[in-house]
Length: 294
Image (tube, rainbow, N blue to C red; front, side, top):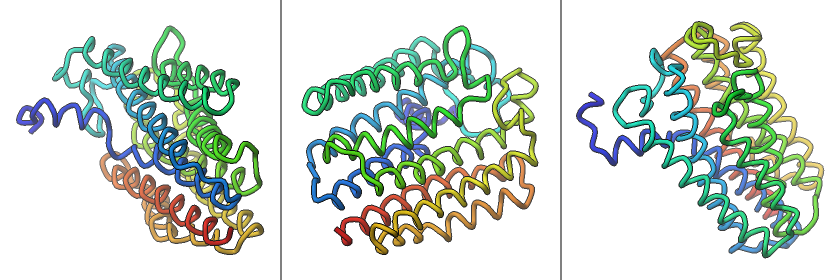
């Protein structure tokens, strides 16, 4: 089946489009916090979206490249990997990763130049984290720190950064949104690594899921869902309209049900989709609620 894919389809698959809600959601939530403060600056929000999408795609290609050359993806259960499948040369995937990370860096530079120069330090940290997740001599993704990085950079940094460049302040709704979005983004990786425990254990990829084991990882997924819902309750102290984020509950419940059922391997792939969609719906509902409650 993969042999019939066109070059464009291969690159789209390698970009892992199902992960892109994790790039859109924090910008939505951060802009919602800006709307609550009556401080939306649409061109900055769009720049932040460009940064987030470019970095997400760059991270995906970088992970494909690094895992592929290490042999981690040789017996992968999940979706297509370009290098691991042998369908695209590693050097080309590396070039694509650097291209998108560079694009994210350039857009981030423009955002920092028109906001606060100290944001450049945050950008450098984000680029470093993107590459060293599975790349370099000592990738932190192989040392059970991947979830921490996702929570920090695709939750706290992405949401608070989006809000800050527009409001030029850190507000309670923005903090609540950043923790909630971070928990859901983290849950996507938790579900992914739960699926990959058998292969990661064999290849020496010491993810948090490998450390916690199946039972502990399934509990962690549930805890993250509870944290996300709890942050909506906190945001509701600013405006009850923030509870519109609860529109994500059906998707959250569906994903949590599959994880709790003991599903393994390919049966967990729909959880990645549902968790990603839950994050997007959560962010949209919260953003709309904050805007209405302004």
